[in-house]
Length: 335
Image (tube, rainbow, N blue to C red; front, top):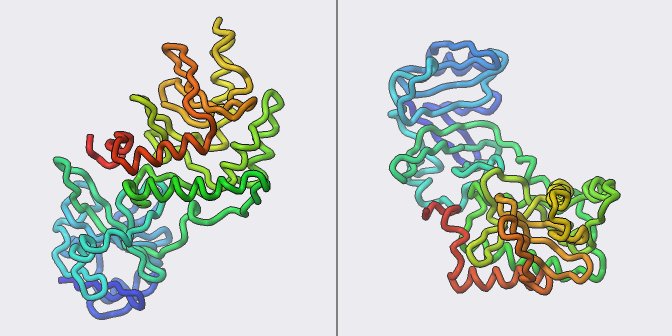
C-alpha cells in the first residue's frame, strides 16, 4: 500500500523523498515495474494494484503523477482505485481539502477545482459533478510553475484625470469576491492592457476607443470565457458580461453591420460596446457625453442606464451588497 506525503519542504512516497523531474528508473526501483502504455504524445506507466499513474514524454523522466481515486475505463487506467494513504502535511488529503479550500489556486483560467501549492509542487484536484455533488476523480501531483495569466503585464500608467478608476475597480472586485471566489471557473480577471494592446485597437481608423474605456482597461482586463463572466452587469432581467479589450473592435464592427441592414439609426458610431449579453444586446459607452446606453437587439431599444461608467459599476456594487442581484446564481451553481 502506498504512503504519499506532501509538505512545503518535501515530497515522499513510502518514506523516500523525490523531486521533479523524477527519474523513471528510480521510481521503478522503489515501487516495482509498472505496466506501460505508449501514446502519441507521451507514455503512461500504471501501477495497477496501487491506483497510481506516471506520465512521461521521453520515457526517462516523470513529468507528473496521478492518483486515481476512482476506477476509469481507459486502457491505461489502473485496475484498482488508490487505497493507500495520501497526506498533505499531517492531514489526510480529503480532510485537508475540505478545511483549506480558500488556499486552492487556479492552474489555468477555467480551472474550477484548483490546486494546493506546496513550494515547487502542485496537487491538482480533478472533480466531476454527480447529482449536483463534487466527486473526486483524481489528484495530479506535478511541478508547479506560475500560470501565464498570473504573470503581470507591464503596467501602463493611468492618465491623471482617470486615477479614480483604480478605486472603482478595487471596489468592484472586492464586492464580487464576497460572492465569487477567485478559483471559480468564471472569475476571468487578468492584468490591465499594455501599450501594444492599445496600439492594436488604434489601428482601426473607423473609430477610436474613448479615453475613459482605455484607462478603465489599463487597470484590469478580462480573458474571454465562452459561457459567462463574473465581471458583469445586471439590468432588469438582462445580464451583460464585460468584453475583453481586444474584442471591442470586433463587437463595434458587428453593431455597424446591423446598421447596414436597414436600421441606420440603430447605433451611433460613437457608441463603443464594452459589455455583451451573448444574444446581440450590448452596453455601450457614448463617446460624446460618457453616458452608458443599453442597446437591445430584438426590440431595438436604446435606453440611457447610467450617467457614467463608474456610476454603473457602483450601482452593481449596491445590488451585490443588498442581495438583490441574481447574476451570480448560475456561476455559483444555484440554477
